[in-house]
Length: 454
View 1 (cartoon, rainbow, N blue to C red):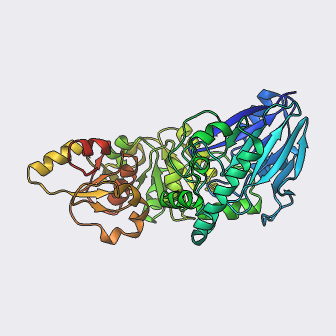
View 2: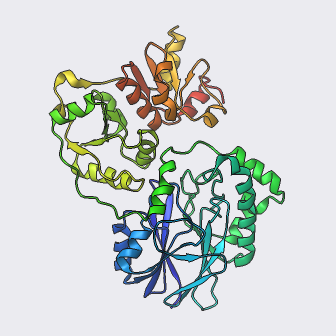
View 3: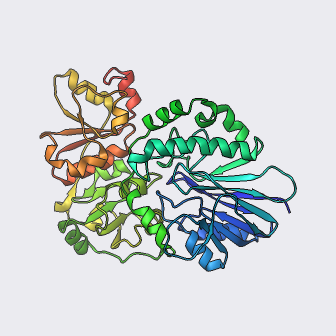
């Protein structure tokens, strides 16, 4: 049988998992923790699992690989050089395993991590291989090299350059590549890719690691392009080395309005999942607005003090369930509870709040009238370096909770690049007692109008 590859997309984290199979037996690569998606696809394909393989100890999510191998009895292939707390099939550079008619060869590709592996999968027909590159060779980019130890960023960037070029030479231009990161994940460098597929040959024409002949120049550009990454990453490696259990997606404990108020008063995190302008128009005082969408778990995990009890508030039980699925992927296993309903169903009138939603044009008009609103920019430092609104206060979203004492008095007009992060920042500032206006607008319009620099 010939080799086929099916993709399991996790767009919320910018990652992909893969099922490589010969029609009977599969190799599952870098599965996410909510395994029901993988198990359904395996059933639909009518294939069993022969091997589960990890390209590296992941920094951006809790793996489902250990649990999938346990459930299926498949071999669990992890780099022999990784220090883990569970039994695994440890492999190193050049080691081979089989699954049905497929041969899986491990190739050392250090850079994203010290022990990173790529897997070259062939079916014995002489066809070009499928190469599962994890956080090494990505579509148009490579994995970041500052997650192991910031002091070793340059060293690992040099290793990344050499690994990518050696792998490309090993497998040839016709080889299809299947990276885990690079689709919006903060584990990658450079812009998010949108392609459905790529090959080594295609990457030779565009990927900086393959087009740049000067290794030092490549490293300099890679390091200069690294931006902040979510704080929850600090917890993922330890979880993955323990052999994490499967996800519990059963419904959280229901919370009534009195319990909700007690939790808010106690300083716990109560997160409203509704769309950001709906939250601004009407919400329970003391909640935090983080709209459920593709960025939800990234920013909740980035901001919440790790271990803080979390209660989810949604319009429907399905909304809560969807949020819960995203959260188990980053190790927030069981919410302390959930409340379903509208704000006026969950609190009395005295506990309801709202704040205005506006635009950059309205901000410009206010300045033209001679008003002097306090503008708060919650974008990252690398974004602000390319341009900003003169006179604005820079308070990156990731730093708001640590810098509340620095927030100026007066009404705060909060903006980011498109409105999502600004909505979270506005809700945090309102929760802390500030008067806010959410600028739910595209920053490009502020630049075009002359309100902001480039």
